[in-house]
Image (cartoon, rainbow, N blue to C red; front, top):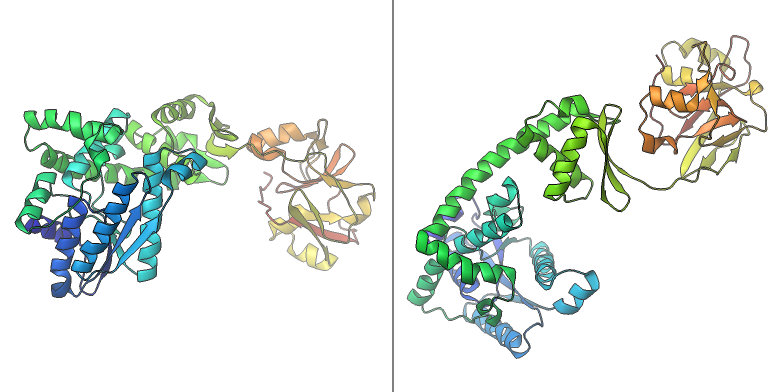
Length: 454
């Protein structure tokens, strides 16, 4: 085991001289072997080795036994230990998670907190056997290629020196070095999904191929190389397809199906949503055929008007209005409206080179004091400056391909149903600055996005 672990450390560049490393120590064979291995490297590499132990309070006296054992083991090896008592069952009920998932979350949070204090890497005792079980577990859930990559040897500041060692290797190492350890009684039952795989499925597969764990390790490494390549293709494609309105559907439709699937997953993850296989397939359909898919409450994938995007259906107060005054800064729907007086000579000298100024400068003398800032209403009409045409605001938004979910948040200056200015679009013919205009104001909002009229 020692040679395998050392080879893994070197292959994946896990440790360097003078590093600090904190070991997740349960007291079982794997974690005790890992701590013993790192202690054996401590003097040679000048490592600072410490340990973390979590008492999950799930097994009564047995959990207390494990805690005491871990403390004694660390004392015997001159290793500092940090211990956390956690009510995992109660926390799982509060968070509506499985006990397994909640325990994992608590463990890694404690590891990260301790590692940050010590400026250390985190070492966990995952083995090739754990890796094989994880692959089978993901396969049973219908995972894609990423799930078949198994447990990564290195992830962020987490290292796994034993990832290429089997459970048999670990037990032999413990016997050779007279390393005592404790056994978690729940590992001997099939109460949990992973234990069923360990106790019922793995023995059958190892009868077919005694080197099954090593075979899976090789497969996961090759699969990781494949997934990394597909990820790079997806990242490059998304970068090319991204616009301020979403991702160009025409670009997404050109992608190979495997690359498109990864691209869909990446877009969802950027919006804090972990898609299942059913979501990925539904989203791919609307990329080709347009439409919308509900991902979760108020979160939708939308494919329309040539663009794909993930949107949140948050309500907008469309009835809110703010009276125009031509002088003071205002606010509406969490947006700030700035009104800045402009010298007429400055405007006329710059209007041809400053498109923002051209589209957002208003002749105050044409705007009645009854005008208001608001969002759109049915029946609104707009005559864009210089276009010699009048059309409904609805039709204008469609022509400009403004995403439907954004239309109700766009601020407009309105005199009844006659729209004088629209955020991000421009000024109407009626309110535009003429050669003889004397009282000129530049209007803008804090998050304005200019869309030039053509």
